[in-house]
Image (cartoon, rainbow over all chains, first blue to last red; front, side, top):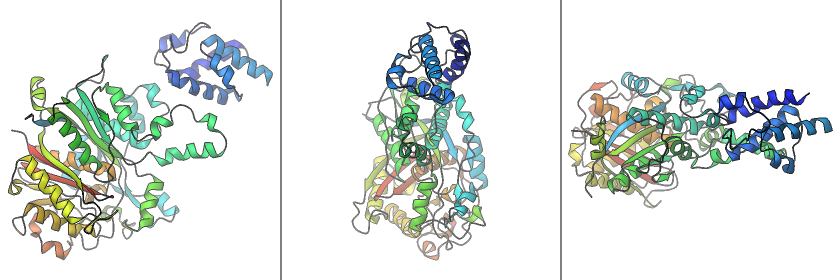
Length: 84
Length: 422
């Protein structure tokens, strides 16, 4: 699985948590989940749980705290996948 | 402060009709919303019928954001959102606002979180999967979940509170909203209540042996208030909601006015004098009704219709006696009395709100809805009031004043007086 693949899957994971649909379609590494996609900070935990279920990985608390923009989400999911 | 409080919007989710037009049609025709539930047979419940709204969960997408909809599991909150949002729109208001509506609050009641939804939480915790619960459990487990969803969607910025007094919850919520406007603390209050009788709550009532168990083959006949062959109540689910408004505020914006709330009372019999956790102290009931009548500034003789609590248990005869005593009206002098529960069962915390919607519709459209399944009234009731007070068919008649009351576990009572607006 490439980082491009993860990006496309991440769009699906983020979809139910954001109403900024146009922005979501064109997200890049710098897109901030809270500031740009207007995701409620409480819902970040749901994004992580959904990502864990999708990729069958475990994302520890320290890694989860770094998942604030699209780039960091992809990097962390990628690292968990390659470590597994 | 001598303010008048009027009703300008209504919404309803009832076992025999979702939305005001369907509900109005059903109560005029005497249509039952009680159906057989195969799961209850499989679980060895004695009562296997229930009043459940034919509710399209996906329709909630029209009321709340996709983000809010995603992860909403609590059925009771879904019912409450639908009824409240419909009432708000019915009053001619838009949902969207950029700033809080500081002049508008919310009193919405319920009994308990959706324990079927909570079962998933319990299972995950017990399986050591607490990390998978996510962020949406607490807001749906908390009693104030429904008021939080409603007030958040509409930006309500005045008093927001969840009330809970068992079967008296709905009427009490309306009363609390009325009082707040009456005191001048708010211009508008969105009020009502909801209930989802899930499998576990239903089972707990079944175990008390207070449910109707002899009509599982004939579900529509199972809820039989005031009937000689009644053998307990039928649990129902749903929600009812109202927009209450200061009269001048409503007039200033040219709102349509359904009816006026003249006043009401809520009290407890103190679980003394025959009252207990499960039975009302008759003196408490009588005082509650008399206080409501006095505060409304009417005479008991002015009441055209009593919308009873009347659940189809042994308490029905006593309730009719309490009404007769409280109003000082007996025999032919007693007003019409009906029980919506004959059609929808007992919706517990939602009962008062749904039955109040029925009360207002009877005022607005000039009719008394039938008591279905009352072909065999309890003889002792006929010794208190005349049989003509118990219509079994639709009666077309101008209804000016309705007294609506509910009585709940814990020996709590609530009574409201509604009047045609003119």
